[in-house]
Length: 190
View (tube, helix red, strand yellow):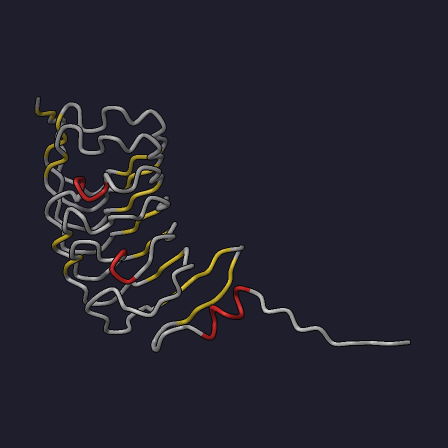
């Protein structure tokens, strides 16, 4: 009987060797995950595998996302992006440029005052958006224009005072809208 050992390189094995310092890279549920929680990152780091589909940068002092923040570091395949508790207060209109596969975006527990709606036009298939625990006061008309696949929005604990009449216009697939812990008093502004 003849036996032989054959070693096959799998994409996840290659990706694990490319993991950057202060991050954990793993293959989970058929997707490449890169987790860099509380790694004191001030920018989206270079060197993350371009095949990454889930990126967890929560707890880093990013404060702002600049134009093409992910494209510049060759991250175009991201499907899920977690940026909770990053002290974000500014998101450039083109920050999410080229993230056309993004289906989930978590921006909870940041310092956002305005909705980053103009930034989200680059994410046409976005389904889940969390903006909970920010400082958003107004949800303007057509806030989610062109995000027809959006199914869930979490606005809880923002201090929202006004939701304009057509803020959610065109969101035919919206199933969940979380508005608890806000300052709404049956006000609709036209």
